[in-house]
Length: 247
Image 1 (cartoon, helix red, strand yellow):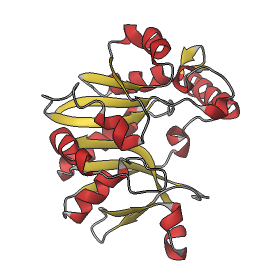
Image 2 (cartoon, one colour):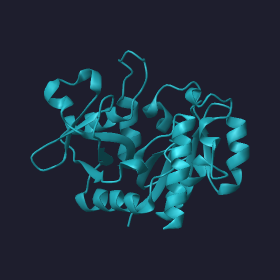
Image 3 (cartoon, one colour):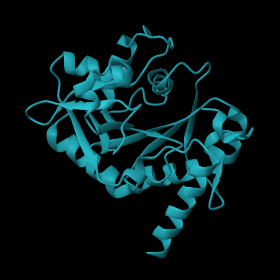
Image 4 (tube, helix red, strand yellow):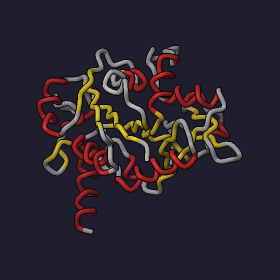
């Protein structure tokens, strides 16, 4: 198995949490939610985990520092592609695969990540993304697959026509990339969009345009892919975790 490193995006403020605490430090059953993400990375054998910090970075670093992770700072915050780019110095000599996780998706299970890693390796893909089916996929990037079931496009809601809007398979923002190609390609991503940001899915687009292989792994468990943006979602995640423990 190839070496594995993990980049965890944890720079956001979390405005909708209505609190001054950085989003990833909100407690989930008495632990910061980002700890569950770090645990999942360790559980699948990540040799190195780099946390991308930004908002109140000192507080995040102080809270998480005993967990054997490294830190990279994203300031200003210019999108997901820009976030991952900040980990380039930490991984400059790394030869293997890079898992990209979100610090606000704490319910993701190691078994799902193992499947993502296995398929990425067995298919020899440059990138493999985690997807799920949603009854109401409004607002999410839709996955368009080719005749061999590989990813042909990720179409954002604003660019989707009626046919594409009917697709229920969405990109959940969890990826695995071949490290060397990822960091060679990130500088090619542009910020020609309304937000003026650099987006990680644009790396996928570059690969597809070059006829490289991009795979996708569908998880049936929608709940494990949910990002936590509000206090209600945090409460819901606590209930799911308690139910898992009870099982």
